[in-house]
Image 1 (cartoon, one colour):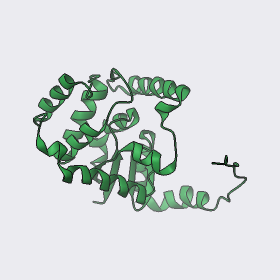
Image 2 (spheres, helix red, strand yellow):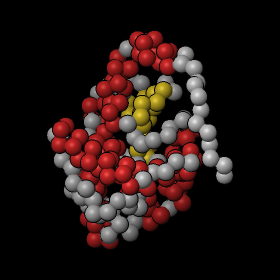
Image 3 (cartoon, helix red, strand yellow):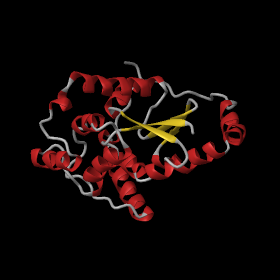
Length: 213
């Protein structure tokens, strides 16, 4: 069975939606869950995050709530967004980034509307995962470095958004590419011929003029 990387950040409601299908994906491929700091990707590419563009922020949450209801996924927005994703990301690393651990964290934030920025909420999440909220491993240099390394690996792989699945050096960005990804696993040659090759042959047209710095 092939191995695929799933790059995620708990800050993303779309990553939460795709996390609900990790069990389905694991039937087709060996998954390696890799937490990244989404802000690191934004900084690398010079992009604004959805939360930094008010109309986009509103649309994202409207759409994800609708998608959750449409797909039968329980969802409750956290009390504030964006929140600091570093503690839950480091917690996932301490827990070995197993599917069960990552889903527990996602569910606390996006299914139950938990607040990881609040000490009481953070304590609740820690108890759910069996980790002491003051566990020294959460601030250990090796855990911090592991998150940086995973973010750097995502950038090196060409990842530009969250969530993203990567296999055979091919990127599948967004929760809505789950079935696309599964189709690729079933018949990669057909997908390369009918989807990837036509895009690779598409010429670059007019480019938008960049604003002077």
